[in-house]
Amino acid sequence: MAAGHKALSGGCLCGAVRFTATPEKLDMDVCHCGMCRKWSGGVFMAVPCAGVSVEDEAQLGSYDSSDWAKRQFCRTCGTSLFWRLREGDGHVAVAFQAFDDLSSFTFAEEIFIDEKPALYAFAGERPRKTGAQVIAEFAAKQAG
Image 1 (spheres, rainbow, N blue to C red):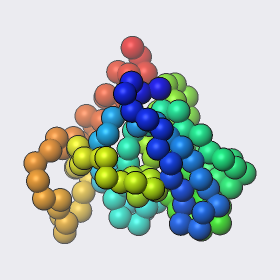
Image 2: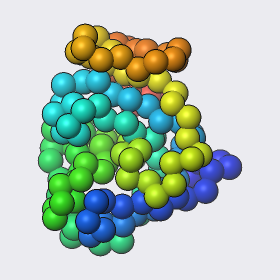
Image 3: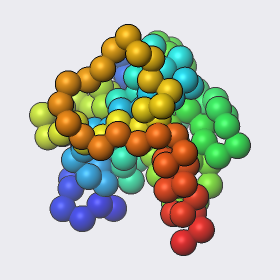
Image 4: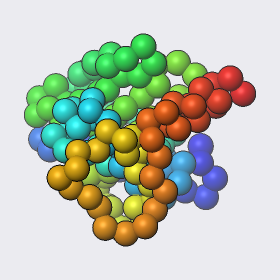
């Protein structure tokens, strides 16, 4: 559980999936990778969390999108909810927009910036990492 952060509630569009999650940090990150853009219908805005608890797991659909991660969504309305590592530290990226109260978060970083289409850009300065940088960071965490 993240030190100093309390569990926050959230859910999908139709309300079939309700959850609580404890942010590892009060930061929202944006992923520009092709899979996240297709899955979310834009960019995937996410909060890294631990201690994720879903009230009714039967309402979650799951798609193994790679050898290392799965994406979970509401079976009823299709809301994109969680990106989870399949093994390891239990890291879960929770969809930012699914939280009931968004006021605690700041926009921290953009990842897979090398896959971002040229037609949009977010204003402001923040770290922007390439896919290779992100994958290297995940690999280092898994090894260490």
